[in-house]
Structures are given as structure tokens and as C-alpha cells.
Length: 431
Ligand code: LLP
Image 1 (spheres, protein in one colour):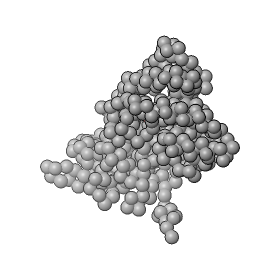
Image 2 (cartoon, rainbow, N blue to C red):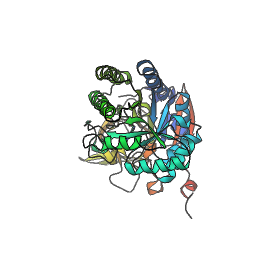
Image 3 (cartoon, rainbow, N blue to C red):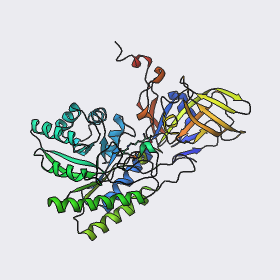
Image 4 (cartoon, helix red, strand yellow):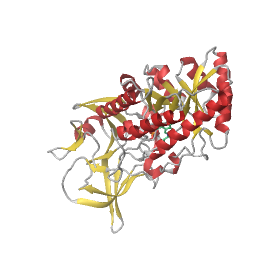
């Protein structure tokens, strides 16, 4: 499987957007995160144009920046007229430093601190998505002190089961996020929010999970949420103006994955939204979603250099690379599958039963197990595909390993967007 923009060239090397990957590895060093800028922008345009054409005026997609947060990505999102979703003071700070307009920022989190909430109110963040009653009252007080009326959403658990990894499933009642509809706490929270003088309840939000390949859970979520809109109207006489469906559309990691196209996913959502509003006689709400993985996931490729090969007869072959769980923890954490290619060779003997091992002092530091590779040799460049989402953003300095650089490629050109950390950077906060 090759992600969009990747192809093998006649010199046997893997190319991305017209750039020779082996040459990129030589120029910038490895490990290296390579992002396909054209694909990112194209994905944004598909979301923005579909939503502009098929949903109520005022609707827009917000890029979920937990998938990949850095100055350049917020600049790109701004140029592409996206909103962004942030989940911490750090993401908010980065977005603001990139001059991202505060009114198009949605701020999430199940335990935002007083400082984070003050910062969000002070900079005029578009929506703060409130997770619990403690936060609701705290925010009301902070907005009152700032003499502002803060627009908010409420995070709702619609009770939808999406078939995805347990750790990234969030819509069910037993979740740390939000208010459940089924036990009445969501309605109580809505009434409470409406009674707060310094808050304006604009939006109900739900996020049912991540890496979802099916439209049905999203369609079900729309129906459950709109039914709840009616209950709220019956109880309070008010209509909620915005529906936010969160993120969740999957990306392709291996041949086994067949994610929906952006339009295939949004078409039934638009249809059910319109038909249900008509049927229930509800004013159509503005629509928001928060795609992360489906915007940047397949746009990312991580490059490593093979440092050592260990053949353990009748057991397996370990191929050690110069990165690992510090730059991609997803196999160690979720047993996440990836496509790994030898970017230096397109032909030769295929080696089976290969395990790609990282360089951390930990047996679980693996990138992938049981894969096949074309004639791997020490010094070859390996490409791990679909590493644009939740890789750099989940990276650490475990074993005091500096984080890799990130480059963007477009039309045969490359540029650094995040510098490689130096050993000196590792000491920045040490006293
Ligand atoms: N909105 C909210 C409120 C979310 O919690 C998330 C993801 C998103 C949007 C974006 O979802 P996406 O479109 O990317 O599926 N670290 C895990 C993924 C955790 C996702 C958490 N929330 C992984 O590596 O798979």
C-alpha cells in the first residue's frame, strides 16, 4: 500500500511529491518526519467545500490539532480557512503564536485549569467546550471577572458504541468525557449552562471515537443529538444553534484498512441532519466537525536508517532503526499496524518475519512485527507510512532521545518546519 503522493522511481528509490526520500534522509538526517503539504491542503479543501455546499451557512470544520500541533500547521489551517480544536494551554498558545484567529478556535479538555480558562477567555476563543459542572461554574466566574460573555458548547456522551480501540472510544456512558444523555446529567447541565449570566450556550458537541470506517455511528450520533435538541426545546423553549460531531474518520495504515472518502462520510451525515430536522421540525443547526487523523494521518511518512540487523534463526529478524517509541509510540501503546517499506530498494529478495525495533532500552520498543521487507541492509532508509497523526504529537524524550525534525514537501521542494532537537535542547529546563 502506498499513501497518496508516494511512488517508487526508476532508480529504485521511494519518492514523495517528487522528492527522492533517500536524498531527503541524507539532507536532513534521520529519523525524520516528512509531511505531504499538498495532501494536507487538499484534505482541508475537501472538508471546507463539502461543508460550505451541504450544511447551513456558518458551518465549518475545525482541524483537531492534537493530531499534529506546531506553528506551521496552524498557519496552513488558517490559510485553508479551517477552524481548529485545541485541548491544552500549550496547543492554544501555539495556535495564537501562529496568529490563528481566536474566534475560530474551539477549546476542549476534561480538566482545563484556571490558567487555561483565563487565557482562553482573555484571548477571545470562539467556543469553550465545557466538560463538567465544576468547569461550568468556574468559567462563569472567570468570564464575569473578565466582563465578557463567553460562548460555550457542552460535551455530550450520546451513548454510541463505535468499533475502534478501547483507548480511543469515547461516546459511551463509561467515559471520562462529558455529560451523558441517558442518565439525565446532560439535560441538567444544559439548564445549568443556560442559567449562567456570563456564558452563552451555543453548541452541543459529541465525539464518539477515532479511526472509524463506518458511517452508521455518525448517522446514529446525529439522530441522538437532534432528539436531545427537541427535549431541550421542550424543557427550556430554546433551540441549540450548533451541532459539533467531533472527529473520528479513519485513515489507511495498511492494505487491510479501507477508510471512507471525506465526501462519502459527510454525505449521509448531511442527509440525516436535513431529513431529521425536517421530520422533527427543528431549525437546522450550524454544523461543525473536528477531523484530525483524516487530514494529516496519510500525509506523514517517517524515515529511519537501518543500524543493525539481527537474524535469530527460526525465530525472527530484528532490524534496529535510529528512532522508535520516542517518535512513534503507537505500536507500543495500541499495537497499531503500519506499512513499512525499504525506501532505498524497489526490488531484491523479500525478507519475511521482520521486526522493526527502536533504539530505546525497552523490549516493547517496536515499530512493527511480522512484516516483509525488500532486501534490507544496514544503511538503507526505511519509510513508515501514515505517521502524520498522533506521532510527533505523542513523541517524548524517553532515554533522552532528541525529537526528530519535521519537513514539508510540495511540488518537488522540501522545507524544515520543526527543527531537530539538539542535546542542548534536552537541558533547556534542567537547573
Ligand atoms: N475531537 C475530539 C473532541 C477528540 O477527542 C478527538 C480525538 C478528535 C476531535 C480528533 O479525532 P480524529 O479525527 O483524529 O480521529 N492517540 C490516539 C487517538 C486519540 C484521539 C483522541 N481524540 C491514536 O494515536 O490513535
